[in-house]
Image (cartoon, rainbow, N blue to C red; front, side, top):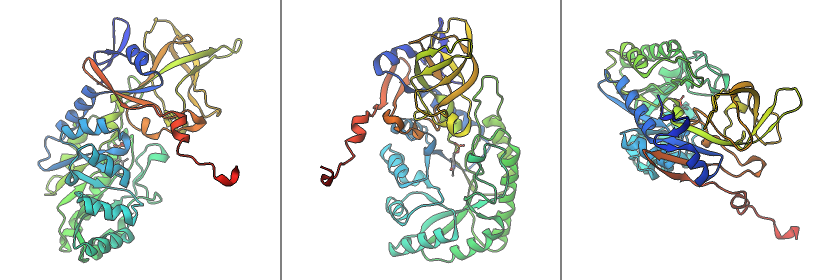
Length: 420
Ligand SMILES: *Cc1c(COP(=O)(O)O)cnc(C)c1O
């Protein structure tokens, strides 16, 4: 459930008409709902009510906006980060260092050192090589790094190939059959506090079965490690729960997910960790856009050219992803159109042959479910600048990321004097 609903024929974000935001901030603009973020944080936590010891870290990469992180931090969420930049953001948003988990296959020596200095809660190690490097850097500092070993369970998550992470030929985690040996070797190093396992098999999962299979494999490994005398006190089950992108889609609920987790992890006697991203932020945001013009093309399907483009919302171009597209003031009439942005690439297409609200030049519309992997994937391609972001809270709203103009971007560029 989200808080982007029609009231008297007009689309609102909570108690704010989206037309007012378009008027005051301009378009395109991402609009997030605080109430929806908080509701999703609560529903996810409620789904895990049967889990006695748990830590929930929001996957910052899904929506790294400082205000969004602050809202979730106030809900008691930690942060799952995948770069030094994300770590600094999470800290800047006020998330305690101890609640930060650092994932990612390519952490640099600098990032590892900075994270040790910041005293983050846990490193999810993705290779033996990374573990050796972290142990060395930690030992130099007289520290011990709290670590979980990310394993690759070789399970097909059944999602888009570009967001699958748990197959043996994906770059993530250590091969399952090598995990015990790597864990044992890393656990002996003075700079290491090997304390657990981690797994994350992909994103936008629409079926719990692959997750369950992955968790079962982790459970087997947990037993083997303990039998070999190793201490395992933490297991990080990652994120990945999908969200409905199309009205009417039915996805596993956090309650169903939680029930499965409780069943599979019964008797593990560990603190369970979770890294949800999309399921928290996805439906908490829309991309508000204005129709530039409808290009009729004779009797062919018209192109509806909107002022948002693939640089603002990359998912359709990147993954062929679907986003529902709704008028801010629907007339009740429908039309069929190709919905496209102004960028000079055919890939700048949000939808082909979409049956949608009839819209005319200047009308406002939203791409729904744009709160995760939306603004954060934006680029300035075609010198369009970076899109603005707004957070709504009841009947008030604030710009939580300024629109960045092309002039501000090229101010960081230099023409060397030898070109004069
Ligand atoms: C991307 C990612 C997540 C979040 O995935 P969602 O599908 O957004 O829940 C969690 N953990 C890791 C390690 C990730 O890379």
